[in-house]
Length: 165
Image (cartoon, rainbow, N blue to C red):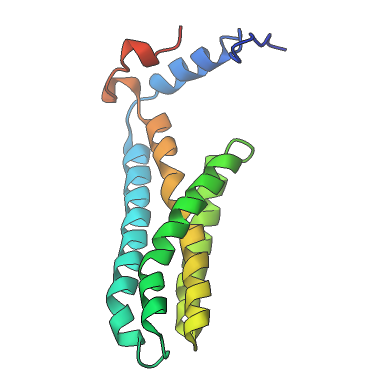
């Protein structure tokens, strides 16, 4: 077992060995496919957010939304993406980031499809809040995954103040 220093860092070189191993992996079609999939997830999430904001004007009348509800709906999903991102970050150390991202994508897809069944303004608010929460899992998880898979020669070097001792 590795000794833990008072500053919280391990004396084990395992992290350095893993980093060197990841850095030795050549950039491949797999990396390009992963980046393309993560980009698609980001595009779909962004499209969902923008379209909901644009369609609120059309949904106002049939769902009998009052102006306060419309204003809340315009920002509710974005606020919940931030909350979902913090929640996903808190648990991503205990579970894999891939699992967190898959939970987010599945939840985002499910709640986006659930929008078609909404009948009232209150239901729309609840579904949009849940969509945003799932979106936080899907949006923030891919960035560390992409950064970890990118070989060192394709990344900018860290400033000296941010390097491991």
